[in-house]
Length: 210
Image (cartoon, rainbow, N blue to C red):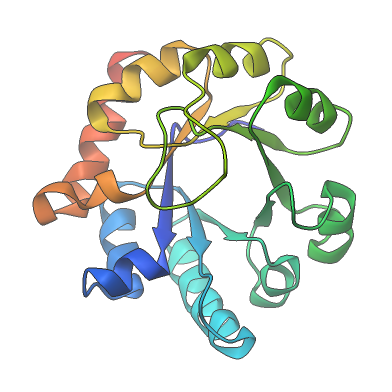
């Protein structure tokens, strides 16, 4: 699978804290050219999660983009999402794929070389590594890993997604270290113009010939 270099994360809790409608944010991200997005919704009921996921999937697909659901393989399947992303304490990759569908994109979070090695034994579509620089939007229980973990994971041939306080200033370094894509959350809200921020990220990726 060829991943878009920018993996835009829509964190519902962060949106709520900043008074942002997740739907409006998705529209702006798509308008800026984002084509790989993830819905992270930790607080809503299952019914509310599904309703939001269905809405965002519809918007993403209309723009020719893919939308991944965090954690909930059942919501991913029911909403028609393109896949699911699981962490170390969630469903296994095999379990997530069995639930989301054989053709679903399945990503898995890893935080050290041992976890990367274990992920490589699965059929995960991509392997996420981090936190690269540390994170304030998600408590992983791990300290910042730096670019070396990207290099290690990328050396095995599976697409790698870097996550953890990725900013526009750090984006080129992350891609140069071997990440196929970088997951970005709060930095997409800098300047109050998410569409322009997406365009800036994609311009940086093009300049690096990614």
